[in-house]
Amino acid sequence: MKRDTIEEIINSANPEVDRILEVSKKEYRERWQKVQKAMEQRGYDLAYACGSELDRSDVAWLAGIFDPIIERYGILIPVQGTPVVVAGSEGGHVIEDSVKVSGAGVALLMEYQISDEDYRYARFDKLEDVVYTMVPFKPGKPVKIAILSSSQFIPYDHISLFQGRFGGENVVFDVDLLRRIKYEKSLTELRITGQANRIADAAFLGMLSSLRPGMRELDVAAVGDYIMKRLGARRTGFPTIVSSGTRGRSVLGPATNRKIKKGEFVSMGISPAFNGYHGIMRRTVKAGSEWTEDERAFMDALEGLYHAVIKASNEAAEKNLPSNSIDKKGKAYLERTKLKDKRGRLLSPREPYTFIHNTGCSECQEGFGAVTPFTSEPLGKNAALMIDVAFMGSDETGDIVFPIEYAVIEDSFWKHGKKIGVYNKMPLNVQEFVGMDTATIPMNKINPYYRPFEEGK
Image 1 (cartoon, rainbow, N blue to C red):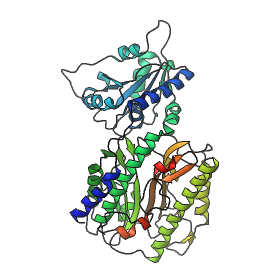
Image 2: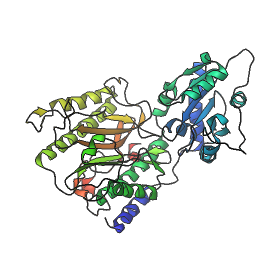
Image 3: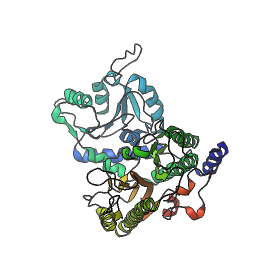
Image 4: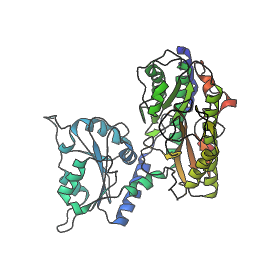
């Protein structure tokens, strides 16, 4: 890939990225008030959410902490007043800078520092002092605390800390409270997500253009990461994916030093985080040669699944149908789609996961909003979602029976009222861009469901 092509991709995308678009302090206050209203209705004095470099979404949404580092951290939300982020001494420096966007307070607690460090000059607060500043102490009246973050990732130490200080009967998990509020997006959130996906398209086009047999997976990933950061995305929702050959079975395999061989299929993905919100772009291509007839049939069938799911999403939005109607349409497509496997049998390809999930301050770890056979509620009024359709090349025994080990098409789309539109311009079939010095996506190749969010007002 020519260095000039990378610069052309960046220069083409740069005018479309509004780097100063971010959530305002006013919107953060409105978020706090929504949470506090729900807390008051349920009788809570205080709510707590936690986070780390892996599970950033809750505290990012509440306080604007998009780039945590080193220690775990948390946020205390009183039923009235300003939330306070609690952190360790070292990561607290980053958090003190991060919360400027939201106006949340910060308190450093010894319980949150790295376990084997000694911070000689650090000044720590006590959890009780912080809590009773936010919730005035009343003799005989316990403080009722709601845990808003999932038990799947909140540390046992954090729960023990609160239960030990305030009584186990006064600390309850209520993860649904925050998840449902976060699911409904503001117009600003939907616009920022659009910017993240513009960056995803540009970064992925660079990865496609650079992909050639003999390159290492990490070299291809580096192109995407470079373009992403040049366009203003600070980090990714997952390590950039480049999985070639048999590594396709890893589904989400981060790039390695493996050399890509001619004729191998390569699944690639990038998820830029722009001012806290995540974009996506994932596709599967072949390195250095054209598809065979069987490979084309496999990829065409996957593209057909994408059409079935996105059309079902449109119908569900227009008619306010239960969201599992989308899943039913996708599964019905799979049942009637039969491909010849290596043994001559006609089989339906197997999907590895559900077709749609929620997104926001994480790529997919929002905890609510995925479309499954069991989700009977309609899609949200205003939502940012990802359509993620994929086929495994294996049968029910785990044997690889199709010509491709794993193939995927993943995009992001918005829903506003009864309308939806795909954020990404990238075509569903991107094979023609592999190894080509292409700086822009031709207008006649753009995703047929692409629709800028501004048109959805």
